[in-house]
Length: 279
Ligand code: DGL
Image (cartoon, rainbow, N blue to C red):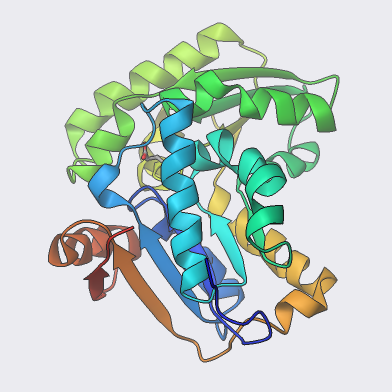
């Protein structure tokens, strides 16, 4: 497949299964406001959280190839499920064949890197989709960086549907947030840091904070991923030079564009206009 000349400048690609990656994009844009971005949500095939490894890998690879065709030299998988199930294979197997000068980065590693500055007990909780938790990607990444830590993953299958149906601020959401909060703490009462390991979960932050005791740190990924990306670009000036800087963002979705635009305003607090694309 012929991709745009690698010396041509292009936007940073931000990929998510749907809307959740907008919480990451928002923070990245605050940190790097002059860069150009293409946000791609695979809303037609979301959620990814309950899908098998092979399917998440295939869908994510299609999205990565699409964003490369749009000229992105660098792509962030702003989705924990895609980062958990597809990133490693794409980095090790596909990227060398497609274009070894481009990069695909995820959200799990930068989040885990932050743990050392938050935890005292070394007991870490992770809230995530069933797919992310079953993959044990957080457990493995934490074991690699902090061999003495204990990780407890906990799947919250109801949280993404609640958010996507506009229920995150309503009383009904309290029931499910309280239930999962109690369950993770029952698994390990020594937990002092919990990763919100799904890009949707910042929308439930206030409710989660209500049911998780104040001494426990809750890590939102947006700011973490944004500062990790800024650091990456500082350390890789050749990649930074390949990113275009016109302060633009293009929103693409595989679903209906006006539906995406309406829902996106829930995540971004401002209006956007999206375009429908086929992967
Ligand atoms: N964005 C996904 C994640 O961060 C959650 C949504 C989905 O299940 O597709 O894991």
